[in-house]
Image 1 (tube, rainbow, N blue to C red):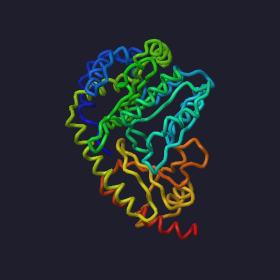
Image 2: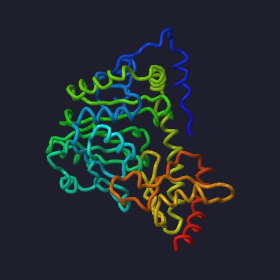
Image 3: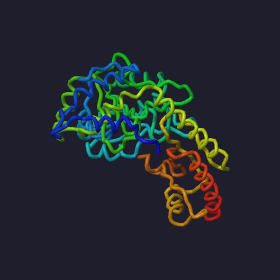
Length: 358
């Protein structure tokens, strides 16, 4: 519910355009140059030529999968993961091999030994989301180093979806795969302005890699759709003028919301919810039999003061059948007053639902 920064729209208003033509398939050079400068603030040293602007983060993922992998190749992804990865991988005919992270340790990266158990001749990559959607887990430098070493040992691509990099909490540092040394040919970063500037409708993302051969191939996919949205790029370029103060305020707001929702959830009997380190999501385990049924019941049959609460069943974020059956994802993207009402509503709902399933 945070507003898109006014500077985004001001940039579009000031644009002196008489013909709305295609931009370069890789994106406007002026935007890519400024985006490279923006990445420099985070210690990500790339050139504008290492960046392809995409139609949202979704296209960045799709192009990366089609560029890095052949049909039938396998990619290891810690689950739970962003639900759309399943559709993107199917479109690219890439097989996801899930590796389970668990709620008891806050969905930390599984041990390297567990990854190695899944690696086969068909395994060609590892993909993570950092910070994570849906868990909010923030990867440590040591975890990323471990993944890099796996990529080097088995000649794998390491893809990292980093659209939530600006939202890290409790003073914890953000570590990018682009910070890793000695693995430039293996690393691909995926990005988007959708969450950074509350601009999902602009449909502007980015694919970033120092692997020149990979980027040349990725550009061919970008050329097939001609160009990314012109006005979205103009607005995004203008938004890059925002300083640290803007993100400090956003992080402060999300930190307050996170602390409130997680603490209140854990006060409800039978609920378990680890504190996320980033993004604006959390996964909660509820005292229920089936999250899909419970969420449907909330929408169709439950009513508390003429209101209900909508949750996302966590089963949609797992590819392993049966996993996440008692878990839900919650996005704390509402004002604290609304989150307070939602938690109260959920507490009453769980009390009523427990009588039904007994």
